[in-house]
Length: 238
Image 1 (cartoon, rainbow, N blue to C red):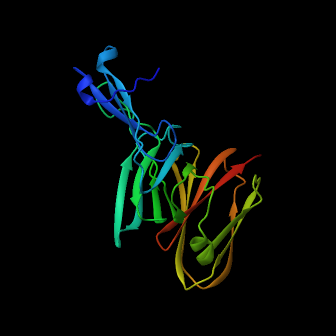
Image 2 (spheres, rainbow, N blue to C red):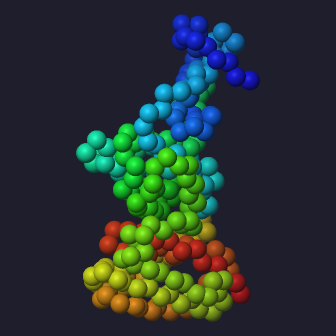
Image 3 (cartoon, rainbow, N blue to C red):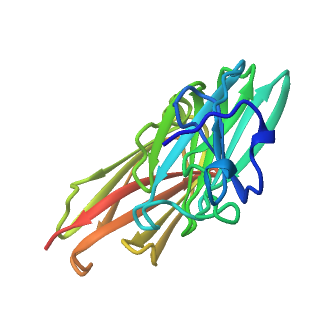
């Protein structure tokens, strides 16, 4: 049940505070916790005058709630570039936990320059040119939205998928020469192998991996291109 109190003075001996956008209107609301009714209350925020973004994560190789993940965003606010960071935690205070969704206030920024997600097992994913004022969901190792800026500079295709005896990788560098590196992880995010292709020229390139002796299961192929990591999920069936 929800209590609405007109003043913090009504709360006596409270233990902790937690924040969440419980009414999904783009701002953070505050819950103050205690052991009985006069020690807890929910304060709804109705003063949202700026832009915002709300991000939820779902782990695959990492824990499903993405506990331990770090989310950083970069945006130009009031004419100045700023980085912000939020960590996903299972507890934020004694008897208190914030919403697992992370919320960022953006002021007058209508576009987010970059969203950098560092998953608990170390995988890093980057999204760019994101419109503010929306609820986003990202799944570890399965990029649901690829920014136009990344597509413009680099494309990556893996086939067949699922695969049996071999996997073909096709990638195109559309701008200038880039340093390309592929790393492979198994379903538990244990490192399997690295393929360092070095400096690659502008154009389309092909790579074939022999998977005949790979155990059946899911894998994550991570391609590093000029500091940006793009991931593809592979399934091997024998």
